[in-house]
Length: 389
Ligand code: SF4
Ligand code: SF4
Image (cartoon, rainbow, N blue to C red):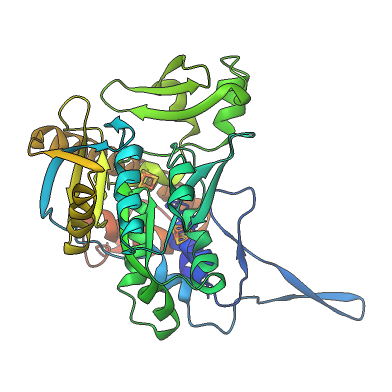
């Protein structure tokens, strides 16, 4: 049943929108609607004049729970190597997307990979789309993550079951790597095909992604930039700006404070900035000017880096400002904890009038304070009449 997702992830605004539960659902009853989390399909059966609501996800072996990264405890993977890197093929660039593209092109050329699940953007509508790409040309034509949200892992079934790919890379934000890692570590046999197919995950550093409505509401209506004019979007933590690069080469820089209201709710409680469950993480912070920081955390990650160096598609220098990385990581951690405590306070107030929320309060308390249980309070000490003890 999807109950744990509903109570512990969706109701608490913790859903990252990775999409892995939608792929893993054996009954295909999870789908995306207008909410910031998946929805459970509702079906009814007509019995005479009355309608009976069907339990669409029963019986089930809870594949969504086995795969959702928000229901797992994480141990960050330590870096095996770190460097400043830039692409060195046709384009010399330290943009994280170009560095990732160099890694993917080399790995596809040497048949280490047969496909990639990654983000692209429809150039006509500027809407983000998750794509399954299998050729070097397709990899090069993808613009990569533009910090606009789309559920990347919802495309996994196309890659694994429809196309039969067995040497897959998954590219996305840290939460996408966490979802893929849960599948890679899964013990449930039904999740075996994903486990066998996903070989490597690549993550960008991430402070949060924006809802696609940001394009119409902020860029078009607020700034007067028609979406047809925009070629790409990028964010810079050091400059605190979102840059919209137009097809004619001009750049519009927008302060992140104006963009932040469009951040997905689930990002507020996320503490993974450095893609700590990804084989490779790439981002702007900590790198030498004109380069991106490249962190390899596994042997598979290091192999991809070596391959790109061998093909001459990547250049690296052993220079990374580790203090900046640590500061950016801690900043996100602080933000996530502050948000979690704010939400906990709201939840406690709600639970005074809604007894159904008390179970959520207990779970949140345990996760925030690390206590094994909410301390029992003697009824005579209590000044609130809630009947919840
Ligand atoms: S975090 Fe991912 S797996 Fe969990 S509920 Fe949200 S979309 Fe589904
Ligand atoms: S901040 Fe980034 S990694 Fe975290 S949930 Fe949002 S998109 Fe995912």
